[in-house]
Length: 563
Image (tube, rainbow, N blue to C red; front, side, top):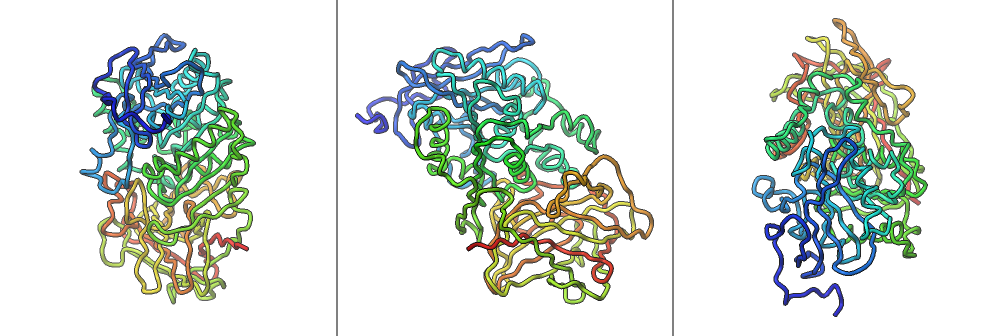
């Protein structure tokens, strides 16, 4: 019988039927029916400081040595798949089907074990039944991962080749341990993972992120109420600048040399979008590939198409199978047109080499974006405080007269002043409108349906640029000191707008929105518990924006020419 035909005659094992130690189980898989395998539950591994970390090992029920696929996180190595539970309060996840033994955001043993891989699920110290205290993304956690990789590489069921795979936290830990280059680590699949905690998660342009940060901490403390867990909200409040606390958690991405298959998304702006591109771009790996989609995070990860791509990559680098993986284009990305409609293009690099960065100046009289510098100076004002309805933003519109692909980072240069404060928080939105002037809504942060094209943020006192890291199209801020505004002071600022890809057909429009609070559609849940949010703003009264003449306020657009 074909091994993938399944065994309907066998009674499936439930996760609750397993006990610590060796279990012979029958797993109902999403793709291969009932499959027999071995689960070793609660395998203890002693760390350098005597702490015991526990892992679950799923492996083929037959003799032989196999490559290991691993992931590490604090969520619950023994947890049931949470997606159906989430749907009752978070109904926008998409279609996700896994085996019942698939922990949160993890590789599914029901896919990997039938394909002759061993899957190792690691509980970070301070989570599940692992000993110790839970301090996310620290050097201790990373060193634990290193030691467990090396432990797995010499087990009698492993052929010495280890690969890492997983989403979000499970990708973030991959960046860190891969930078240490463990000898048995042969390839990684970081699937949407922040690589700079300060810039990409806890502070957006210097503005504290308060919604997702809070829900993440509540998740950990609710899951492990009796364990000591680092209070990262308190740390966020105590460390508003990019100081040693955040530097200790940074990863030197250029130290990564291992082959990597990286997946990024236009849809996880405010969390994983920027950091995944940075991880791919800065890694020193000779063999690296980038896949970019504009859809939902978990749904895309568990799609059969995605699994087969992951498998083809690991088959080549972990098993040595000549399967033509090396002919895969180094960069594949989805150009979005509308919700779940787009097309795939390929390239050899990121950022795309065939990009023209075009300056579109803000016209304050016509409220438009235009390619020629604006002669007349205009001052525009809006109510900056949250909850404002009247005059709460300013908008500038560009309508395409031919089909245009915009892929990459946009940059906004503005001249601004605060009328009633010594600081100001700027929220930037990029929206697409169709020929009938209807907004084209897209998948947004963390599975949200009614998202926009791209976002950017800036607390103006954080405007100091890191000139070594900045490029003409991507400003990078130092976040090392505060530059407060004097009364009536007008200053230039450069705002990083996160990577995106959108197709504007002739007659369709791009709209730039500048505001003092979240740039959202009323129907979205961005800013609530399921999205990003910024409740601790410094805004008071009105903001002023200056355009035209000596105020060269402009939006830099990445126009891609395809032959």
